[in-house]
Image (cartoon, rainbow, N blue to C red; front, side):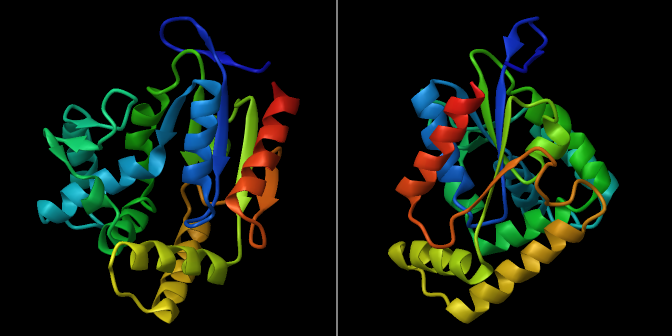
Length: 232
C-alpha cells in the first residue's frame, strides 16, 4: 500500500475522488469514508467557506492578497463536519446551507482559479491526512494535493446530466430554478475549472476514470468499491 507520513509519523493512506460539479463525488466519498471508517475531506467546502466569508466581508473575489489574508484568519475559526459534529461551522455558526447556494458556488469557482489562494489552502487540506486514512474529494486532490495517493478516482458525467441532478436537488428543497440556466452555469464552471492555470480540473495520469452519466449512484458506488478492493 502506497502511503506517506503525516506530522505524527504515522503511515496514512489516501484515496482521492476528483471530478466536476454534479459528478456525485461528494456522496460517493462520504459513503466510502463510512464503509472504511476513514476521515473525509470535502475540499470544495474550504473554497466555499472562503468565498462565503469574502462575500460577507465585501472582499473582492479577484484580490489575491486580501483573500490569502482572509484564508489565514478563517483557518482558526472553521470546522468541517465530523461524526461528532456534522455541521460546517464558521465562528460558531452553522453555515452549511449558505455554502450550498449557487451564488457561493460561483464565487468559490472564481476564487479557486487564483494561484495564491490555492497555495494558501494546501495546508488546510493536507491537515486532514490522519489515521486510519483519508478520503479526499475535490478537483485537484489526486493531481496536486495528494499526488502519492493510494488510489485516485475521477468521476464525471455529461454536463446536461449533472445540471439535471442539481435541478432535482434544488426542486426538492423548494427552490425554483431554470434547467437551461443551470446547464449553462455548469458548462461555465467546467470551463473555469479546467482552463485555470493553477491546478486545473483534470484526471491524474494514473486515475481510474468512471463516467456515471447513464447509471445510478448504487452502481457507481459498486464500481468504486471494486476499485478500492483492488487497490488495498
